[in-house]
Length: 114
Length: 108
Image 1 (cartoon, each protein chain N blue to C red):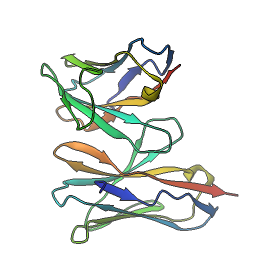
Image 2: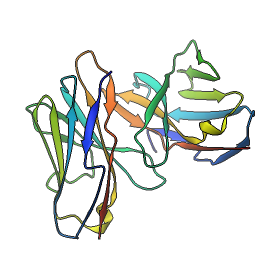
Image 3: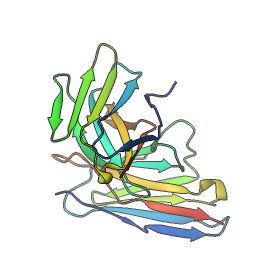
C-alpha cells in the first residue's frame, strides 16, 4: 500500500531557530500534500495545501511566512517552521494524495520548542 | 461554529459494552465521510467510510444521515484494544476536515 515517510519523528529546538520537517511518498507520486497541526487534546487542524510545483494555499490564520512549505517534486514536501517559539510546539503531520491513491498520512513530528 | 463537531468524551465503558458516537457537520457540500481512529501520539488511521445506506465492518457500524448532517459510529462488544480517540472526518473541497474527536476508554 501507499506509504508516506515523515522525518523527524520528534525534535526539540531552541526558541528562535528554524525546523524543517520532511514528508516523502515512497511508492506513489504525491500530487497534493496537506499539512496539519494538532495541539494536545485537540483535533487535527489543516494548515495548508500544496500541489506539486505550485505555491501552497494556507488556511485562514496560518502565517505563510512562518510556516514555509515546499513541494518541488512529486515525492517530497517540506514544512519549515521559522523562528520557532514555544507556542509552536505541537504535533505536525502530513497527508499525501496521488492519482489513484487516497489520503495517506505520515507518522507525524512532535516539535518541542524550549 | 466548527465544521465537524463531536462529543469529546471520554466514554469509559467495560469490556463487552456497546458504545455509540455521534458527529454533526455544518457544510452540506461535504462530499465524503469517514471515521478515523487515533492512538496517543500517533497518526490517524482510517477505520471505515460512511454511507447513507449504512455499513458494517465486524463489530463496527457506521451511518450517515445527509438530511440532518449527522454521522454515527456504533461499536459492539468493546475490546480493550478499542481504547483510542475516534475522529469523524468529512471531505470538503478535496480537504480532509477532522472533528474534535471522541475519546474511548475500555476497562476490564
